[in-house]
Image 1 (cartoon, rainbow, N blue to C red):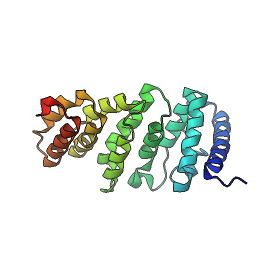
Image 2: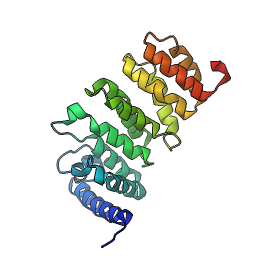
Image 3: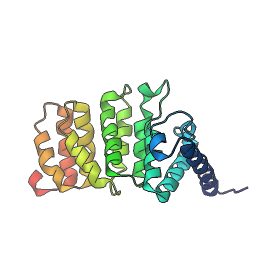
Image 4: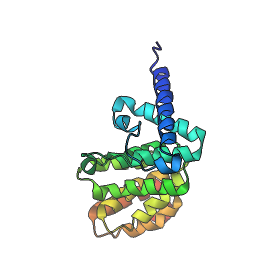
Length: 212
């Protein structure tokens, strides 16, 4: 057998992709299977650390095939559900991780995945998960979706929940988008001190003269 882990992962990904495409066909095609959680072959491997690269490679194969398959793959990851998912909220993080790996989907699907990720601070019952959310948002910096993520982050600065506003402000500076300057300046007067601090830090990262 192959000793190099990359070869092993690629061959596993190819096998998983073939199993998954057969399952998609058995469900009536991409549109019908997109939100189906029953029997999806990728679901048992989504959150196994040793299988993450395999899942990402399989998603890449879907993306290389066509956009419809890529959308089905992403939606399949996002729709994962079990008795623990309501507490752990892993599916939105995994769907975002797939997108951040430059898997190409239509704008509406990408927007929905990013919006779900930005809603996680409100939905999650695990305080430490905030770091994972911010880290995942940061992965989009410099990717195909960077502009879209910036738009969603700017929209989230107006959210009623301070945790959503804080998550958005915490990563906006990393995207180096000048559109963020004015909204962040407004957040310097936010009622929550954590958001004022995050906005000031983001403005420092942007290094825009308007923030001086």
